Amino acid sequence: MTIRTETRKRKNKVNPIERFGDKIHHWKPGESGNPNGRPPIQKTIADILRRIGDEPAPRKFVKRLNETNPHGNFDNLNNRDAILYKTTYDAVDGNICARDFIVERTEGKVATLVKMNFNPEEINFLLNGVHPDEPTAGSDGSNGDNDQHTA
Image (cartoon, rainbow, N blue to C red; front, side, top):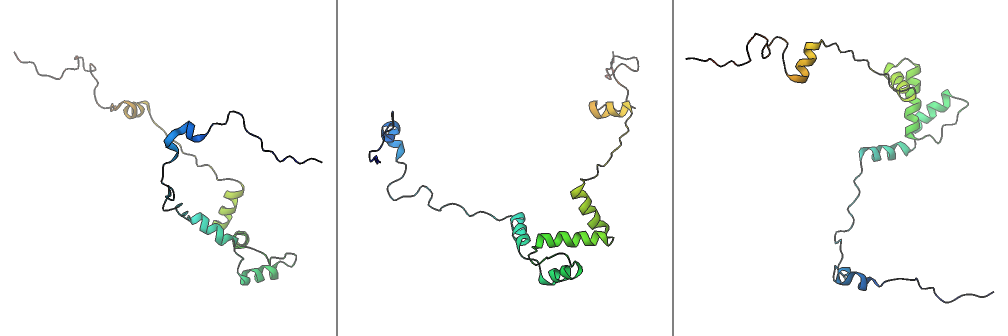
């Protein structure tokens, strides 16, 4: 078995200094191009809620779930799952808000029907700014000029 110790050279490799000239050295040696460093990442409310949701559920709630559900083991339940269990039990007990929350997230939100009735004059007013009661040019037999001509 032979071990190759030589390094391969890339064909057509150009020295960056030859290619860019003095543009390659924007800062002096030892000087940073970003002296303040990377800005800290701002935590959003969603990030905080995800972190809290991943924390273990309160022992009191886990104990109550274990007592009411003999076939389930809820010892490793996190807050997010605990909230969903509680919401489900509230919906079964008749809480309408909990029921709507579950239905909207499992079946989708119910579409709201909006009925709009417009007559043609109202549409003309909305599109052209012409009120149906206003006379238009030439409708009264004139040429549309409202100027008073005196001799």
